[in-house]
Length: 447
Image (cartoon, rainbow, N blue to C red; front, side):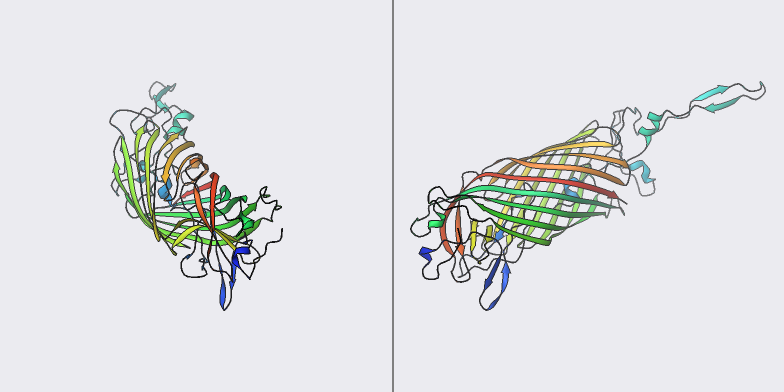
């Protein structure tokens, strides 16, 4: 089916169902983009548009994921308990003390409080009677390995010591998708949309760099930058009601830097049983700005930590609505507005996690979160596995996916416009099969 827009009367239009450039008379072309935020952040491929002042001018900008500096993978050392309990923490010491003692390592059966290498075991060696000699026995390999200090870089409470830098590079792929069906559409005015169904899919390949610098052993400055290659697609099904054959998919691609962030993180608690931090950050996003508060509190159990997490984001949008938008090759825009007449929204996410050392080199993490993302709620689970062969370097693989979302069944208002037609309400779309997915490789450095 060839998509056309009647210039005689809007009522006869089969509005374009498509993706990105909006050429307009007497002004430069602008761009509407829908960057996929990583799972659980609530932005979910958002675009912004002005729906109240004539032909909408979607911003030539992108929205991305929540602040993902080392605050999302932070860790601290803690004071060793008085009893000889196996732990992988060591307490921060005065600056004059050798920092080697601060590194936290898996105990793996070490029984001493700080996992100190045992004193040499004297062994008598036959010598002339007049001069016996004592030779130390070889240190068992297992004891030597356990004694090697290692500051675990993948610990959810990691934080660099004073004067040190922590780096986390995420290289990943994320996807947001849902099915939609047009409802409340007048078949005489917009026959192309009457009972029309399809699927929205936004995917992103991204590189995210996060740096943290220790101002003191308990206070760090953190920063983040992100570059993404984004693809947005509206797939249109055959319309069994009107008999219209499947229209071509509307596909748009966008790449570039789409997030910058800066903030502080403070370790406010660090004792034999408990550990916690709180952080505040500011994000510069292409169609919004955000103020983010982040906190974790953990309870230490042997070589594991059970923790709770909380993230609160106040998001200021550049226009008075946000949602998903796309445009076809004729410049006809279809826009699903998650919220209208709003310039600031609040996202809140909380959950539980468990981090555990498997041995001196390997560790794992699992998390479950529940979030209120302004226009919908979502539950998600995540898991990661990490390998750290040396003190200054570690690798990880992390994945996260939604398992429930209140967006399913919601009715979202749908709008359309073109270079010659102002913003017009088409009807509603009902969402189903709402899904978020994230997979990323992680590289940790400490220097």
